[in-house]
Amino acid sequence: MSARTRVTMIPGDGTGPELAAAAMKVMDAAGVGIEWDIQKAGADIMEEAGTPLPEKVLESIRANGVALKGPITTPVGHGFRSINVLLRKELDLYANLRPARSIEGVKAPYKGLDLVMVRENTEDLYSGVERMVDPDHAESIKIITRAASERIAHFAFDYAAREGRKKVTAIHKANILKMSDGLFLECARKVAEEYPTIEFEDRIVDNMAMQLVQKPQLYDVLLAPNLYGDIISDLCAGLVGGLGVAPSGNFGDHIAVFEPVHGSAPKYTGMNKVNPTAIILSGALMLRYLGEEAAADRVYNATAAVIGEGKTVTYDLGGDAGTSQMADAIVEKMDSLR
Image 1 (cartoon, helix red, strand yellow):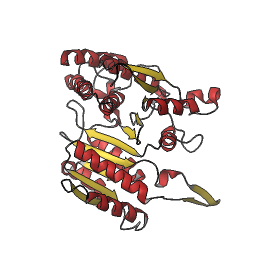
Image 2 (cartoon, helix red, strand yellow):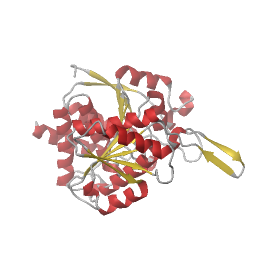
Image 3 (cartoon, one colour):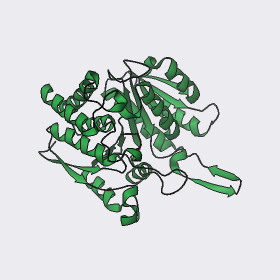
Image 4 (cartoon, one colour):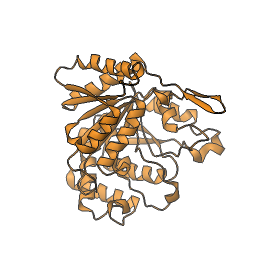
């Protein structure tokens, strides 16, 4: 990494700006020389910009090649489509990486879990191809292509090989959706043959949900099309304590956008109350992507240590600290880990 690396920061809306400020504080303390390019997007700028995602935001991400963003509100049943979906489509961020790793001190059904969901990010039912056939019938088109399926399978196996992972499990419903999910499974099996040192298996999505609740320790890297990946990754987050501790990254060939997967919690806006763990750990994923492995480890280890101590954590982690106070505690802990 160069002396100063320019990174797009999208604070988001609701509690997003508070979380973004906490994340930037921790990333700056990691000592890797980030220059933040602040770009606004979301519901708060609709009136001013006429769109929740101005073109200059996309231009910034394309120019910098990497972004960290806070949560952005998505209207339910009306209004603009998800900004996350738009970003993935416009920037061809075809791979969504969602680690689910146990942290000591976080109340969760299991301990010692270390799962990673790799989710195809650009097609399936999330393509948004739907219509009202008539007033009483709605239709959505599920799109699965060979190119996208092989591309995400290669991403999953490359990730497993690079990170020393032992197994990839493909998730599907090919017993019923024989053409669309059948094609996804066919592509996963074909790509698996190129990685003989990594175990490959597949699971039907409903059985996968049950297996993860009963015996999640059996699984490692999970590979799924868009919709199943969205649902199962939230299930995995629940196994380790919830979305408040769940980071994520979205990857294209030359661009990556990192973000927490939880919502913007607008009712807590300005209250300095929400848990910054997810966005800080998303920042740690970003540092690793930028080749700053040591700094990424410091951020992760300091965050885990602060949570484990339980002294300066937010209300959902059993404490009474604010967002900024928890970030300060992580920075202080990082200093001791140098």
